[in-house]
Length: 285
Image (cartoon, rainbow, N blue to C red):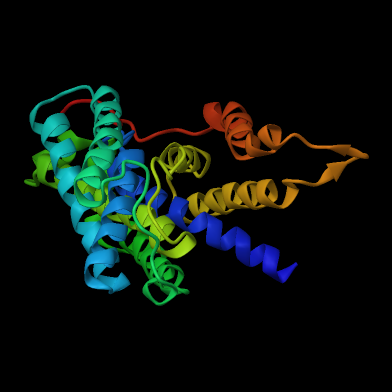
């Protein structure tokens, strides 16, 4: 049982990083469909940099830098370019999906995956400890600091924030870049912590599950964390049920693999109407 609970926490780690990033972005008023793309960029960057340097810490923090740069591109398009945030986020996801195979082909002559990392170049527990610090920091920033207050006003009442002399654009830029860094760390935890290499599209929709966790958690850090742990539980159950039998019948592997995504749909159907998003979420200011 203890091992199963630890598996739940481990599997929730990438979602937690991405959801915390999405929390900053969406509380500031920017819909962040691009979380999936940020995670893909972070996963590939972490594996590539770790292979090049032999140091997973450099790979991890380098992945955050690459995610921040990618997020800056997204911010330029939706904040300065005033593009539709959902369409731009979807385009960024497709860009990441196409860019990673091109990069792998040029470096390793393979579009599918990076070479496997030696065991000594993989994390054992660091992403979990670092995540705990970040989660506590996110709660403190959002509840106890003027930065969190301004961030909330950027998504709820940007006119009041601007009237007080603060730049809504600058706050939104900072929130989106922070989202890119955090989501990229979520991707990095996949490739150099939960796995031993980057494989093509290995995030498998976790960026969208992180968005679902934001809605389920009503954009509040403690509830978002609980929602991510719920999705981690579903993924752990999916792994546990593979190859098992229920009521004397073998469960098809394809049906078992659907479990996390089916749970996401059912939860969203039940809770979507009960969550009130930030008032200016997705609106151009």
